[in-house]
Image (tube, rainbow, N blue to C red):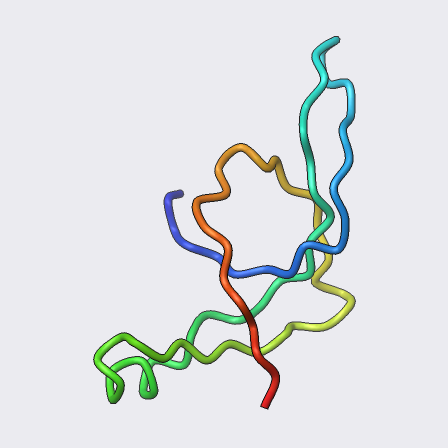
Length: 73
């Protein structure tokens, strides 16, 4: 749907899908950024929370647009 989602990559792997190898990743999802902190920092600080082990999912690595650091505090 074009929405940006944040996730921690746990590991990469490939899988044959319709007889074609596809690069995939097992990820742990994060929440959307805290809107209040994003607004107060003029979009320079994005604070997300890890959603927990139940939020693991497999994604295609092709649409990954950028890599960010998630610094715990």
